[in-house]
Image (cartoon, rainbow, N blue to C red; front, side, top):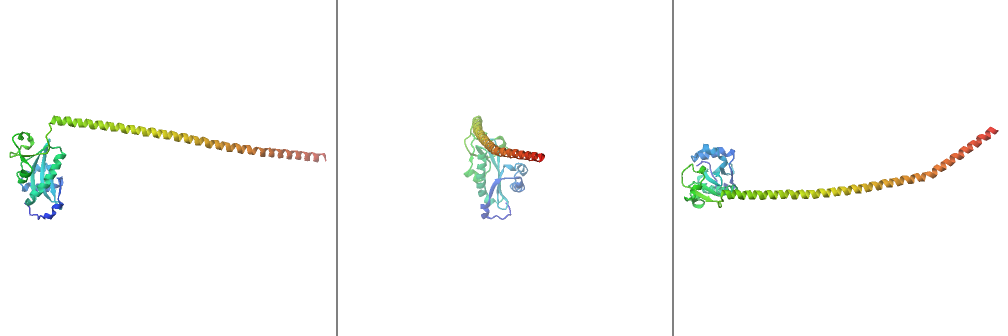
Length: 251
């Protein structure tokens, strides 16, 4: 399908991923080679999973169109036709993961390669054909299906999801109340600790003030004898001075 040289040993370097806008030019070339409606597929590039080589080349691509709980595998393309089945294996593993992540119950396809019809999908009987979504029935052909899980009635599924939602909300509410109680206990503990610290601080402050008052009283008492001695000395000096002055006046 392409003149590009392919080296089988590079298969270990393959990456399977979802297509991005940067992949569109390569995808368009592959779609054109397979004569697929590339103009319509170009707008739906996000449906495609690709296999990318270590050189950045897109080696294969496969579309998955989702409708409700079902999906359609479509528009497979390969850069090297001789490696188609090995690429299909990689893409099929990827598609199963994507399908289960979306909660799908059934996959459909009209791909007629032996890989799909022989080892993966089964022919759809008349009882299943009415279950094909209208979005998939634009092209007539033989239909094959793959059942991912048992189908649950839509109303039962909604009731179950609502019950799960209510249970989750209840658990969330209980978790919030538990956290609030814990915060309340922590806040009360901090308040008690702060109160005790204030009491201890006040006790030490009062004790320190009392000690300073006692030291001030001792100093005042110890100075009182000195004051009396200075007063006596002053009185004696004044008397002596008065007597000396009287003697001088008598003379």
